[in-house]
Length: 609
Ligand code: PTT
Ligand code: SF4
Image (cartoon, rainbow, N blue to C red):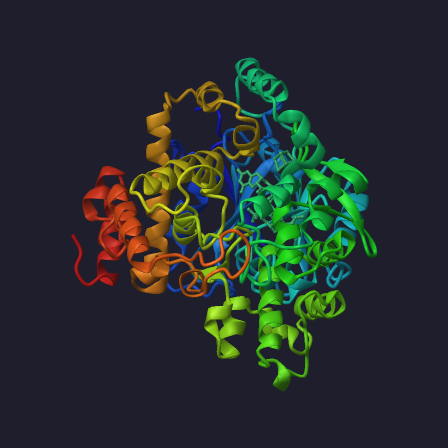
């Protein structure tokens, strides 16, 4: 078998033991890697009802056959996954880090960490050796200082992921951070690491990847050439994802004032053109030909930024100064928190202030008030005072404040930065994303605003599934950055050729779609098991988009229509082979080779066919 190392490194922090496990080749072929492997491990190994912040939860760091390939395209990424403390369901993220490359060269497709250390610990893995290292001197440090210290100790050729104060304090949306500008695991994967007293994982791998390097290099270089010569390349290199600010304003999808509006007067002061003008540096994940890490000045230094960060910490809070937005971004990066969820929590605090709901807590955070927002962001990271309430996530905070409608989330995960009142397909994409509301699995909004954006035609459900298959299935399983395809239009045929060349398995587009559907069905089953059942209300976009129309701009009056949305959701379920409540049918699971899963979820569902 080639392409995979075929080995998992299993680490038990409680017993300070490790072992290497051979992976079942059938599982690798059926799930490929990354999210597929992580979902399979969590489904197979977690006892139902596992406490996400308890020792029995497992932190899965999963690479795939394309991870680490020299020449890419963009192969320096890895999936970090666990049962989520924010949502109670399946959670993962995809992070660019040298750890991805090193773990494959050390001989592992996946690292699984369970148990809980009795004192602060970090793992240092050098090929076959695993060292449980004392992290007392690192506990309390932020993610950047932790990385600096560990690279000084182990050399600059290692790769690592790190948590900061937010992960240590189990802030529910704490992430893991690498390379100072890469943050992964929105649904609280950093909190899972913190609950295990695990400050960092550092890996040095010096072996060779188990691939036919020549064939892989040919397929990679064709893909890279196509990307580099694409029309979009030049502008992408100048602005990266931050160009989306101007587009989102024009399309009336830019979140403003906690998604109460979809345009923002100060957008030009925080947009891609400003980023281009003031940029101080451009960085990337490992093995990338189209760097998107744009560094900008912040109030107290510099920071790497993206569209999501700018929109959620800028327009959505009414802040129109790029350095101030950058400062909030910086607080999140050094503390190790998700910027999207942080922006959402701060926006709830602002809406609550406006409604007089924060008086009892003794704080005021007005729209646009950077000082109050940055203080609350720090209080969240360190769980000081009222910060502790918002550290539980916006959904929890809004509920405690008595106004659940203020929180913009699905399944507990905050919506990323696209207002979807006039984009039903994007609303469906958020609502059916397998980790809660995130755009990573389907970003149909650009197609939607170019066509009939108000329509609920059944083909929109087809768009969502088509994208979920490729973005949420292929790329999350390969594991490889999807941007060459999404942003530069690099043909998917290159990826089919590459995965075939690397693994020797005769994957086709259809077969890869089948893998994607298998992963989706298994993740859905995991949620059903962990929540003890399912209802279609869990696949609904936030109520605000149905109840509160936009009041300004060319789309004033726009909101989602509940009956029509339900029709679209019905169609989505039908296409997926799931029943009217969103439960994968027995016949569907069998066709995907998951018959054993049907037997287990039957007990959580009243009527099951
Ligand atoms: C991703 C999510 C995103 S998605 C953004 S901006 W984006 C936010 N970035 C954050 C950040 O920065 N700092 C911080 N403290 N929190 C942040 N939270 C938000 O996290 C990311 C890129 C981006 S930038 C995107 S779309 C693409 N995502 C990919 C994906 O999901 N899969 C894949 N195969 N390829 C992808 N390529 C692109 O990667 P999460 P990263 Mg991130 C500062 O991790 O949990 O998936 O959340 O991983 O290495 O930073 O790359 O406009
Ligand atoms: Fe990382 Fe951006 Fe390159 Fe993708 S395009 S690999 S996210 S730097």
